[in-house]
Every structure is written in structure tokens, then in C-alpha cells.
Length: 287
Image (tube, rainbow, N blue to C red; front, side, top):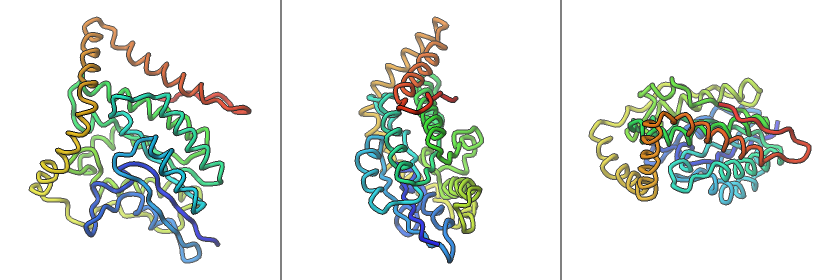
């Protein structure tokens, strides 16, 4: 049995932020890789994910590097950072992901994808601020659902309420999983692959092996790296988000808030319809 090459693409989630081991980030993809192989089929693992990456980074930087080792399995988990930019455009996100998925599956790779909770819910933003981000993440998730189905990807639904509500899965920044969260994510991906005969080793354990960061360590992170992260995002997003929040309030007062959801749904449908290729069935948006 020949070796399996697994390449992971994405942002800070896949880069392993929140799961520190030996002075570096490990993360769910590395944990998953450990459970894919057997003595008869070794696994070569490459993690190309980069903190802060958006769909454009995956398409233009990570995808070309991923094709070189001719991977048999590629995970693509990205999109949250797109929603945190004032330039968010679901049509552009759909086009990039379509190209990435089509290229990888066209080269014979098995594709692993996931949808994710919206960052506003994880940060506990108040309604008028949180709803625009939630709407954007639902749009990205709808695109990922539709394209995953189109290209036969193995898809993990990680946007469910249980995942969001369980605070033991999350690190101090409330945006990235802690060790337990990364382990649960990896175990759920392993189960998907095992059902298809693609994961031959033992699944990752779901309980942490290392003690969680102390409260003082978490506060230090939030006061240093965490503050820098927020400042960088706020410089770009905050003025735009405040405008979106003002629109939420206006629509709420008029009783027309539902129109914003309808508009987003129409945008997703239009974005997917524009991706129809010859000899392909039209795509449908899923909630």
C-alpha cells in the first residue's frame, strides 16, 4: 500500500492556534494526521495554513504549493477571516473556493471541508454588532455546503450550537479552539475519513494531555497578542461594522430586519448560480 500525502490548507484554526506544544502550534490537522496511517500505509503531512489567511491566500499562495507533492487528501477550512474584512464579497469567496475545490478534486485528491461558527457569537458581540457577522458566516457556510456537495467532499458540520456553547472547547481568545477543541475537531474529521476507509489508525483522544493555560497566562495573551489581533481587525472592520450595526437598528425599528436575511440569501444563490460549469447541475444554497 502506497503512502498517503495529506496537505492542510487554511487559516489560524488549521495552523493550530490555541493548541501550543513545545513552543509551537500543533492543532487539529496534525492530530488528525497521526491517526490516518498504518504500518502498511505511512502518512506524509504538510501544513500550509497561515494565521490570518483568507480565501484569496488559499487560492493564490497555498493551493500551488499543495499541488507539488500530489496529495491524496487535502483539507480546506477557511472563510472566517473573509467575514472580518470591510471588503467581504460572497461572490468572490464562492469563486475562489470553487476554483480551489475543483482544482484539488480534479487532481484526484480527497477533499475535507468544514463549516464554522460565526465569530460574533464566539466573541459575544451584542445583537446589532453580531448579526451582520453571523449573516456573513452563514453565507460562507452556505457556499461551503453547496460546493462540498458538488465536489464530493467529506464535510464536517462544526457550526452547530453544541460546538458554540461548550466553552471548554475554546481558548482564551474565544475565537480559536483550545487543545480539547482541536482534539474534538480532529476526532470528528477522523470519523468521517474512517467511514470511507481513509483513516487507518486510531482516532485522536478528545481529552487534553496538557494542563490548560493558567488564568494569568490567558490574560497575558489577551493583553499582548490578543490586543494586537483585535487592533488589526478593528482598523479595517470596525468603521464598516458600525455602519452595518446602524443599518440593523434602522431595519429593526422599521420591522424590516428579515429583508437583510433575504438579501443575503439572494446573494448566495446568485454567487452559486454564477459558478455553473458546462455539463454540471446548478448549485443550490443550503442553510
